[in-house]
Image (cartoon, rainbow, N blue to C red; front, side, top):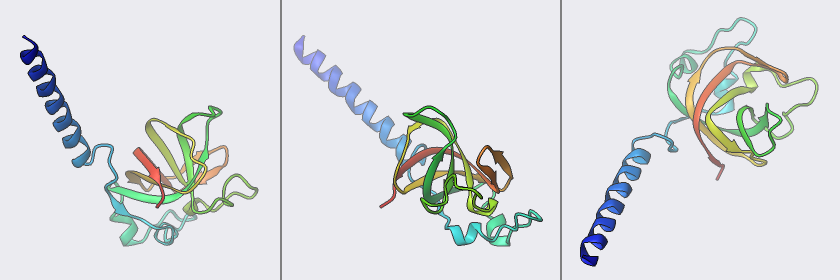
Length: 149
């Protein structure tokens, strides 16, 4: 009887491991996406709303962008909404950075507040979003962040 229980536990563990591996290797919640840098985001003319052809090609695509988190919520532990900015000095100072240097990030699930540089992964939209800290030219629906290395 103990052999059958042990076999059952091993079998369930194997299936669970395979499902988890498949989930992360298929891009769900993983670090996959086209790398976008802040020079490219700067190609957005935030006055007219016109973007370069290279930037337009990324609209609706999965990307990864490096930067620093500026939480938009009072919750000190987990955040679901934040601004991604290119440098730690470009956070909530007056005046705020230009809109093409801020990305509004909406997480699918709350993440820990990050105090250092991070990578943010998700689907990029070229759309203006207003927040209490200024206007962003981009929105990122994100499911994954990681420490910048």
